[in-house]
Length: 180
Image 1: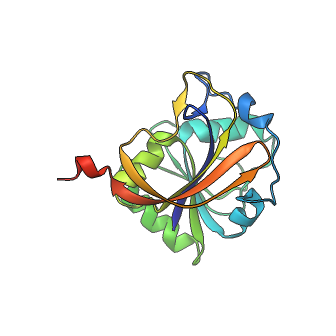
Image 2 (image 1 turned 120 degrees about the vertical axis):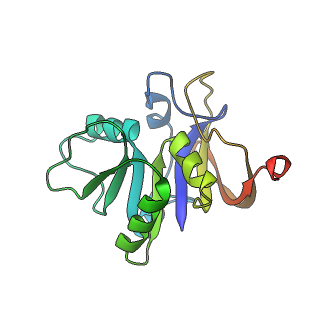
């Protein structure tokens, strides 16, 4: 199962126009509480992210790569790998990457870290199974959108964790009005 697990502002942005997450990092939450990150990560066998997310992680996580599992970075740019980390750079159709991730995950789930356009590419390919989103009590007015696609989602669970309203959605497919 491929899950886009992320946080967003109330007005639907995952980062501000300068790719800052300061608005997110100051929010109170319990990593082991409802929709907590600890339980989620225990079931993850492979990760995929875009190049902007990769660069943000490198800039903010210090010298240690935070993910022990294989990580794919979708990019058309020449990016430096992290020594000792299982990072695989890819470009083009996400279907091939999804197939590789599934094989590498050893029966565990897949996590799409970010960004929103990448999540949209997987959704358009019919490969995004669910969206788990924690909504922060913040509005930015502009920035990187959560998921810039027209999709129908089905709510399958919700809870409050600290400052966040959290929800799990099953991806039903393209917006009903757009289906041919």
